[in-house]
Each structure stands twice: as structure tokens, then as C-alpha cells.
Length: 323
Image (tube, rainbow, N blue to C red; front, side, top):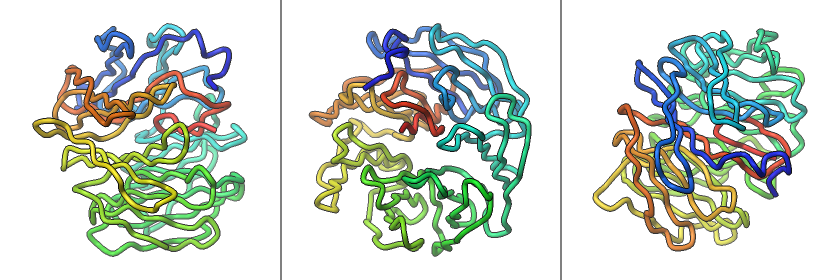
């Protein structure tokens, strides 16, 4: 289900490093070797495919720009000035980019090509806008506010705040993902060690499932039956069965680790995650849960890595949220 024009692109992993002297490491999925290191900027946060899948963007927050990468060659092509980009999304119709300016507590609707600002959404309740995902009909999206324990529901077209959920402290909501059936959102609450479930038609927490320490990233299996949850501090990945509404497996990093953010290979057989505090990239076999790769990368803080290419028609942003 990879787009025909993406099938011949090299199967690579793009690993941004969130140290101040930042760069992005490119790794071959086939050989597990570092191919090159790109000078993408300072404080690199995530690597995001454009809506039309033609460009990869690295959010170099401290450099105030988006570094651009050609996915056909895996090489950097330039930079686009953008104020403090932390994360990046695209509306489902592709007509707007949404830049998460975490430092200034702003959600910025921008031109999807030039990234010129069009409209800014901010709210006193939302400190540190971070991750997001869109409803199935694309009419609204849910944003996590990391530093205030808030979730916002925002209209995609009117750019208005439609709802708020204030989570009890010490909540630190992180990744937000729409369930494959479109009927609920899942949110990783890193502060309280919970996986939250929010119905699409009632903006309130319906279920809270206890997790291990510091849940962060959320990824669905290719058959859409499982949710993979990375637990940064416990050194594990938990597997949540969507039909049974419970965790059924735990995959451990031998000797401990810090699995953080990433994504699945195109065939769904490998889950790639950054080791946030260990300077490595992990590869888990999704059929056995075994760690099959542990690849050292330059720098001390690999962050929101992108696995490319991915199945889908277009990108909603982040580290490969596809539709």
C-alpha cells in the first residue's frame, strides 16, 4: 500500500538529534548502518513528511528553520525560516501546515509550502503545544499541551478552540493518535503513567489504562489490531490489544533503555524507536517482540525519528501520520 512513486525510494531512517549542536543521522533499514549525517540545524526535534510526500522536513527549533530533505536521495536540499518549530502537521486537505511553536505556546497555521504565517491559535490553558491528530472527518484536531496538562480540541477550518480537557497534575500529555476505526483518540500521559482514551463525539476521558514508566509514543500495527506504546523510562514497549482493551505483551530492551519515538517499517515487521537517553536507535521485531537492532548514532539525544517510505496517500505530519 505504498504509493507507486514511493516504492523505489531508499528505505531509510531519519534520526534527528535534539542536542543544541544538532544534526540528522540517516540509517539504512536493510543494513542497519549509518549512511550519512546531515547538518540540519540546532535542536532538531522531529522529521516530518510533507502532505504531498515529496519533501521531508526537520524541525530545527533552535535554528528557527525547517531543514528540507529530498526523500529520493536522502540528502539535504535547504532550509525554510520558521519561528521555533517543534512539531509539524498538515490539514487533511493539504491547504495548511500547522507548526507547533512550543516555546511561545502557539499553534501556527501556515502556508504548506512557504510556511508564511496565516493564523495563530493560543490559549492561556495550553503551555507547550506538542503532539496532535485529526478526527476521521478532518473537521477538528486534538492537541496535547505538555507543560499544563491540557488537551485542546481545535476546528480545522475556523481555527477556533472547540473544547478543553484539564488533566490532573502531574499530567504531561504527549503523543495523540486517532484509533484506526476513527471512534476514539488515544493519548500517552507521561506524567501519570496512563494511556487515555477519548471518544470522538464526547471530548472527555472515557478510559485510563495504567502503563509502565513515562509512556510517550503511540503506533498502530499494520493490521490495525494492536497499539504499540513506548515507555521511555521503563525501557520497554507495551502492546495494547484494541479489541480486548488491555495490554497483552511487554517487549523489553535488554539491559534497559529509553525507547521514545519512531514508527513501523513499510511492511510492519519492524518497529523503529529512538533511544532518547542512550544515543541509539532500537529495532523491534513485531512478530516476536525481540530487539533485533541497536544502532549507535552521533549525539546524545535522538528524538522524533522518521521511518520512510510509509503506506498512505498523504501525510498529516509528525513522524509519519498517514492517511
